[in-house]
Length: 445
Picture 1 (tube, rainbow, N blue to C red):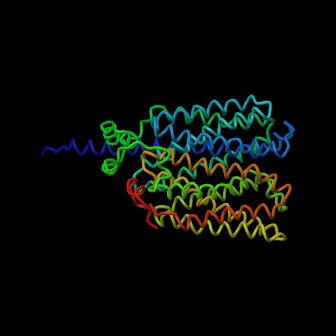
Picture 2: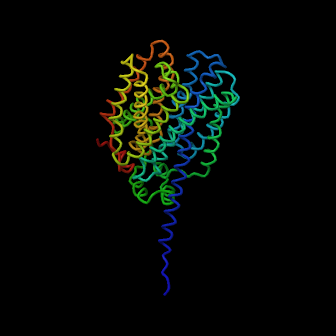
Picture 3: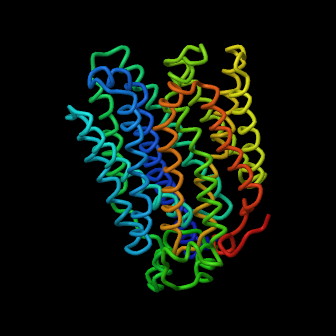
């Protein structure tokens, strides 16, 4: 008997395999960018003491240096988002990682606080651009049923990078003779690896469709995206996006939510995590490796739990209740002046776990609730607003701890968390199981 061949079926299987391989590659290069972002922001903490002694830095200078990257994000994220919507995801995707590599390498040669601030500012611009293009790209290429998990995986990468930086920085600072310049410059190796991995990546079909390049969009979608994505793609509008659309009647609620939620989520985290050693020492707890890495490890666990649950219980359940809990925890730390050290440590660990969990949703929501034509600028704007909070928190925390003490400082952090919880209670949508076109069309609580 002769066998019957099925060339069409074989081609379909081959195409599906190619799409899976491409998705793995896309996820890998985007996760690499997030590891780098977390690493750059986390590596400053372990060397802050040595750096301050070497450069004779005051508390104000320490705050400026720590916040410089966050200010850079404030600049880079809206500009990068605007550029990604106007010129495409691909060129901006490569530009930001190139800037990362150059600015990271410059850290090896820094010999003054002013130059360090400039370099950290440039790195922040690269991070902001990465936020504005990386998360939209992940949303635009992800299958609907995996989108939440894949975007949450970027949160795991960010916290993993932050923890890796703290661990690497502490070990190199304590057990080697390497200078703080070299320790900061270790981010260069990650940046170069990610740059090489991104060479040859395609443009986003959804962006091509949004600017009217439909034939190119169809061809790339057929080659790289899930089968249901092409149908959803063809339901999108072809229209030019603008910054003003973020505040239009159609989208102002989405803009207010993603910006305010992100602001209130990261402000307490950056302040506490960046200066984990000094915060824990103020409460009579051992800092160093155990304290800083402990908080980061618990935060990473919170992101992993969110990753596992996001497609099961949805976005809103992982956004609203944890914010109320974290606000209460910070208030208890601030009000209970004579709390035993072990209780304070447990409360900080609880905060780190749940705060990291809902911080993961700040990666997910912007890519889902905004349409393609303003997905980049909207994500960039929200990132910029959030980094205003992160920069303020990072700059003011050492000054507040020194002049007001830990109690009032933690109460101010609690106030920010309460505002975020109330805003999310009002506006946080449920987007689980919706295509990008459906998710951007409106809210459903």
